[in-house]
Amino acid sequence: MNSTVYDEVEITWLGHASFLLGFGEICVYIDPYVLPQNPPKADIILSTHEHYDHCPEDNIGLLMKDETIVVCPRGCCTKLSAHGIRCQSISEGDVVEHKGVRIEAVPAYNIGKPFHPRGLGIGYIVEMGRVKIYHAGDTDLIPEMKDIKADIALLPIGGTYTMDVEDAAKAVSLISPKIVIPMHYNYLKGLERDPKEFERLVSKYAPDVEVRILG
Image (cartoon, rainbow, N blue to C red; front, side, top):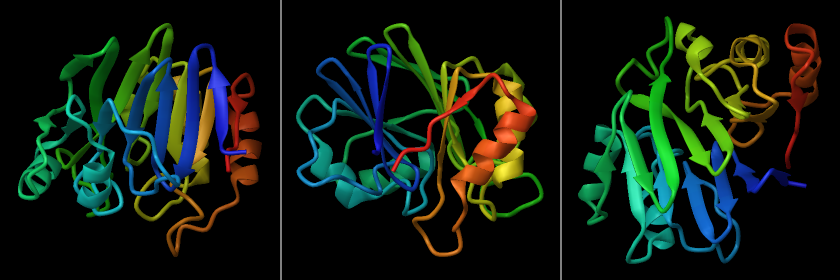
């Protein structure tokens, strides 16, 4: 099963870092590198950074309708604009609201790795009704996570380009969400990980947090 429901929000993990959030009639896609068959059109599309597996111009174009807004960092916006896709650039600390959905950009970066320097990408806190969902983007365990307030955390566990399973479990202890969903693993080569190991480590570092493994 690749979907779960929390309060009024349905969360579907499409694979890799790609998610579809459903809130009533509202559809929000995050990093739509992986899409379902016959995907519903988007009201909001969020990209965390410009890399191909997070900011795919073909998929983003496919999901758009007249009133769709695309929100992404500057590098991704430049890439999309070159393909005729309208977008709104966002940076750390910025807030965008559309159709009752509040979107806040938060830090996401690597420490001691060259892949995602600070300023390249962001994470998002998406507020839908009473629910706050944190999509961490491609990030390591960073000190700013202690300031994140979210009911649900979507965290990468694949290592190499992001946190590994242990650092992701430590991140859960900083964020203290009600639910955590692992992502960014077992899709691209080199990111093969066991989500059950993540679940075991969360039970060690943050035993009060529920792990939901989708897919």
